[in-house]
Amino acid sequence: MTASSRALLETARRHLCALQVHIRDTIIAARRRQARHFARVAGVTAADTIYHIDRLSEEAILEWFDAHWPRALPVELVMEGLEGEPVTFPRGTPVARTAWKCILDPIDGTRGVMYDKRSAFILAGLAPQRGARTRLGDIAVAVMTELPCSKQDRADQLSAVRGGGVRAETRDLGRGTRRRWTPRPSRADGFEHGFASWARFFPEGKALLATLEEALWRELGLLGKNGGQLVFDDQYISTGGQLFELIAGHDRMLGDLRPLAYAKLGYSSASLCCHPYDICTALIAQEAGCLIEAPAGGPLRVPLDTTTPVAWMGYANPVLARRVRPVLRRLLTEYL
Image (tube, rainbow, N blue to C red):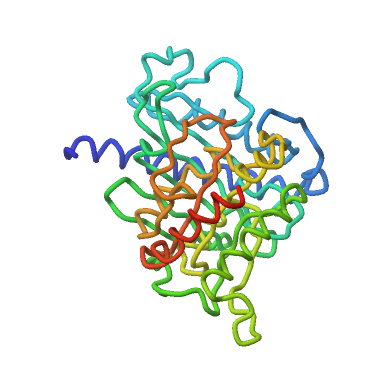
């Protein structure tokens, strides 16, 4: 990568960081005035249910792009709620003349944060524009920012430019100060006494996914070993939150096989699954040393749209991936 190309990506990274700070601050300010309205359903799209809190963030995003996005980086914005005519910046730029495609999830983890239970995350990925052929693996810049619960006085922001590692900082929301920190994914070579979970957030498919997960732990010799429960489960209803737990060293393995389970059971996966915008910050996890891949291994080959269901697995390190991958491949064939 040339110095000028890296400088361009660094400019984009800084602007996406600033955008996400604006979204976070907008939501925090709105919570003081109208938190009781956050959980009101504002609409239903092909991808998900939209709540009032989501609408607040969408308005803030469009205003910010109009006012601040660099004209030197003409971009197409891909975001839930913008499924009609393409939205580009500067406004009116033909898609064919944009150089970049930005996929954005204003709030990943809406259900948790709107009830003030757990942090959500603002997610964004920027890729060179390749039209409908633009893929998750093309993302060159990614940023994720924590949207904290009301009792928190600090929030994290992580960002990455491909090949440049991860930049992580914690901001004191009261004082406005920032502190850098270094992500350290787990280096454990096993799962004993650690967190490792598969997404099964909703009733649909939960039994099948739990059966498959139990079979995996049995095959790995960790089911009821010595009468103890050696692997801990944590259902974080946010793909961005799950990736953060891997990056921060809290979890050793995470996965989302819902699209495969729903296909097996005949359920529609349109609004019940991870979508490309939910996992658009996989680059940050990869730059930290984690593996984010397809369930049977290999890269995630998904377009940057708002509707494609995405099944994925995430490992804190290559040793854990090598331990699980062959067993999981066989079980996927047997169960899904």
